[in-house]
Structures are given as structure tokens and as C-alpha cells.
Image (cartoon, rainbow, N blue to C red; front, side, top):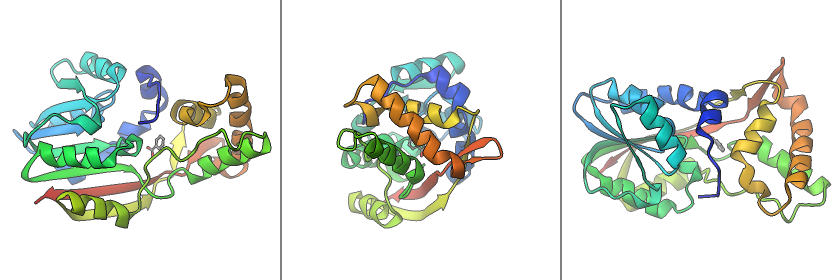
Length: 253
Ligand code: BEZ
């Protein structure tokens, strides 16, 4: 996973759309009372709490201790654990696994998918949504272009997320032992909060891009990237990010 400092409070205040949109994916999960459900990358726990409203028994896991601490405070009756998604320690414990806006952060996809498979009972379902092929391309293009213009092209990274196509992700799941029941790739333009929304988004989510340059150099690139994006993505006083989602439902054979 790229190094990223998660700030759970900022995440909830500025980027609560992550779990707002996630509520839609829950319809594919359709949790039932008494099912054991694992939420991988639970963040601050809102979606785990919504799953639990069905009567399911939920365990939320996240690699960030800050996120898990916030989730435990917000939902003291639910279970949360700090667990790296590539090291899921479960053996056929779950009827279903849910994940929203997490898998694109994980570099070792083989370890992730093998762990998901191992954690599910036979016939169990995986329902996940994350960034798909082409996700936030206008933003990464703008960062690249700004870095080039300012002479840092070879030191700025923009390809550290996993945004697969429908065919490559289906192949990966099938290779590991899942049967893909449904998989969609779709555009989901996403409003960012406030006039500083794009600058804040880049600072929060793309901080890994600037790990080889100084803070001042990074600020210069971010400022220029925001200027490049503004004519097309600051619409009627609101920032819109070009999100593309990959949503999948797959069954452990
Ligand atoms: C996403 O949810 O698609 C996303 C969020 C942050 C960085 C990259 C992608």
C-alpha cells in the first residue's frame, strides 16, 4: 500500500461521500440477520454500522489504527480490528465480505484475493466497489502535466493505485477460485466539498505522488494541477472529480 497518513476526522468531514456512495453498493450485498460479514477497509465504520442494522454480525477491519479507533468510538457495540488487507487471518469464517473504496489502495492483489477467498465459507459472496480503469484520470493527468511544466516529471509518481479493467479483474478473481456473478464499470462524477476541494483531495489522497520532492515543490505542483483542472472540473462553483467505479459480486466456488 502506498504510504498515506489517514486523518479519520478530516476524512469524515471532507470526504464523507465515500461512505455516502457506499450505501448504494450495500444493495448488492443484501445482508441478512445472523450472517457473519467482514467489512474490509471499514474506515470510520459507517457502512459496517449500516450492515449491522440488518441483524448481521459484522467485523470491520482497516489497516489504519486511527480509522479503527474512530470506528470503535462511534460504534462501541460493533467489532473492529486493525488488519492489513493482504494478511487476513480468517479461515472460512464469513458468509459474505464487503468492501468499499479500499481495494485500489492495495498493491499485493494476489495476497488480498487469496485472503478474501480463504476468509469466506464455500458459497459465500464478495461484494466490492473501488476505482476502475480510468478512475481520476483527469486528476493524475493534471498532476503529471504540472510536474512536467515545473521540471519534476521524473520524480512525481501517479501510478500507485490499482484501477483494473473488467476483464483483468474478472480474470484475477476466477484464477483464484471465485465465480464472477456481476461486474460493472461506470462513471460516477463525484462532487468535492468547497472551493478548496480539489486541492484538499490531492493533498489527502495523492500524497504518495510527492514523496520524492520537498513540501514546497509539491505545493507548487498541486497549485498548478488545480489551475489545469479548473476550467473543466470546477462547475457552477463546485469541484467534480472524474471517479469511475468497478463494482463486483463474486461467489466462492
Ligand atoms: C476512489 O475512491 O476512487 C479513490 C479515492 C482516493 C484516491 C484514489 C481513488
